[in-house]
Image (tube, rainbow, N blue to C red; front, side, top):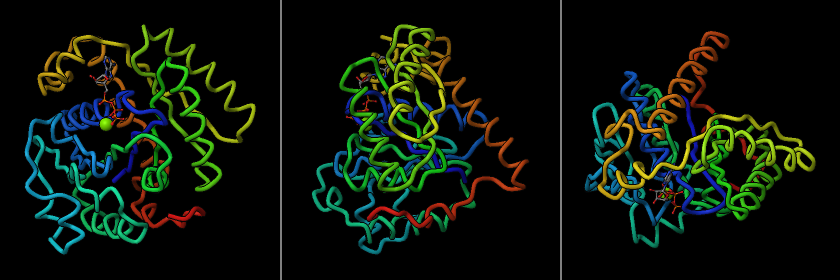
Length: 268
Ligand SMILES: Nc1ncnc2c1ncn2[C@@H]1O[C@H](COP(=O)(O)OP(=O)(O)OP(=O)(O)O)[C@@H](O)[C@H]1O
Ligand SMILES: [Mg+2]
């Protein structure tokens, strides 16, 4: 199971939209996906899928077996809901987070991908969830505060958790060219100050169809495969799968779940 976090410095840049559409895109390619709604206490992956989870991570921490806490979101997609309005969940400590991850590790053989939709910002749980990912996808928009907040997130993840590599997704930009330019501008600044590797992953253009689909609780990749955003998201999924296949054939195995227990140099 490869673990991918979808994260950002600034809120509202499109993490949940990307995570949910990616889950559907990967499932359409025959992959089995688990989504962890890591926007703890403010979780909304369920809303994007139009489902009503009966159990959340809160129940898991109260001793309910993981299999009973998972909700089928769509064919080949299960989710562990993060709970909305649950103060205790938003205040989960490092021990509890490790417990949740340990439970997930027990089902890792069932899934090809674990997608973690995080909250925005620099909270400990955001940093911790990103630090266990094999690939940390940072969403960037042209908004100046997205630029500075993404920089801050990368800096803290690098300094506190020694994360070295980041994949950048430029979202809500005009077109691919604008996305590439945004990436170059961002990478120029980051690489002046931080010894990290940034990988340009994909541009997802601003698409009013995606916004409309979200409002109707539909996922664009399912709703209108020809929409510009759906095409970019499908292309992202194809890249993710082909990269994973290459990694597996080089390493002899897919990315390991042992990363969940990777010693983080931060205070997870
Ligand atoms: N490529 C896009 N084109 C148009 N609208 C988009 C695009 N990506 C996201 N949006 C819109 O941006 C808004 C925020 O999206 P979303 O909830 O996915 O962001 P988020 O990063 O998960 O937010 P939060 O930080 O609050 O969790 C939504 O209205 C969504 O429809
Ligand atoms: Mg979100």
